[in-house]
Length: 397
Image 1 (cartoon, rainbow, N blue to C red):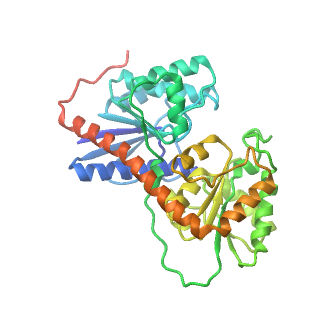
Image 2 (tube, rainbow, N blue to C red):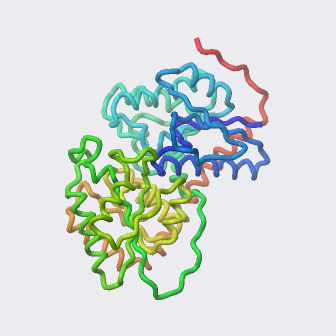
Image 3 (cartoon, rainbow, N blue to C red):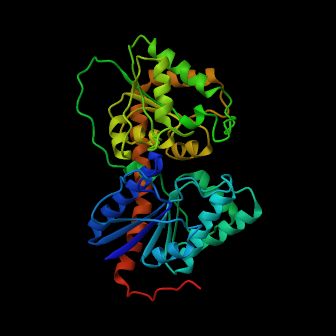
């Protein structure tokens, strides 16, 4: 029995993008185990949450903990594992989110090294690191990892600039593997189903509520303009607002569902998708649309990986890094383009959606091929660990 601990994953996060990483990672591990004849016990070391978990199964244990408050509890959890996999919440291994988040990132990695457990950095965005001390501390822990994997070329370049000289696997986002239920066939000639993911965070102006991400345009106004133009479009579009961050407790600055319901008060003809209970449920819904756009990257990945033509609406470099690395260049940069430029790009893409679907199919194949490199390296390490004699368990000083 190979014991695997997942850190900076989540089994019940309100952000279904973070959840998509976790569900997909577990699917990858199960796939590897089946192909290589391994038996797994997977522990998700997670924060304490009220939402019911969507990472489930007989091979899954969820261990809530607060590493900054109870580092010994975290140490015991990773010490009990044979292998630790860290996905960094997708894009949190950077110093731009404040010292507390970086401290937690570094502490959990340090304690894993101290427990003498192999640490795998799963495909994620690295950086930016703007300060010398955070760069040095990140470099020290990254160099000690068994596998280092990025999900885009920008992150690979960031690591090289930091001084990481060892092997770096440039893969893609694990959510390309997120399981979902494909839609049933629809008769031709019906309304075009247009999906829009409205970011509650951007509607609020970010956590600071003051254009935190430096958008060039008025995002709420841009969304209203999109709704008006698609509502009046001669194709007779059926508009679906698709949330991807859904607060279990209700409300909050990030809640896409609350933002979508508020917009429906202004645009009563639109459909607001259900408050999804899992990332796979959200992807299954998105897969039934004909065209999609959104500011939540994993909502866009759900469309991209289920064959729905998509225009990602970027507020950070992670969008262009991920999609650009796959040769898919339809991302609109909300930090550099005007509202009219974004609208023109979106409606141009809408008119070319059949071509987009073909380009997307080729780009997805590239992404899955890149992701297979990570899966192969991870599978080799898992097999080695399953065959070796058990080493003594380290104790916390």
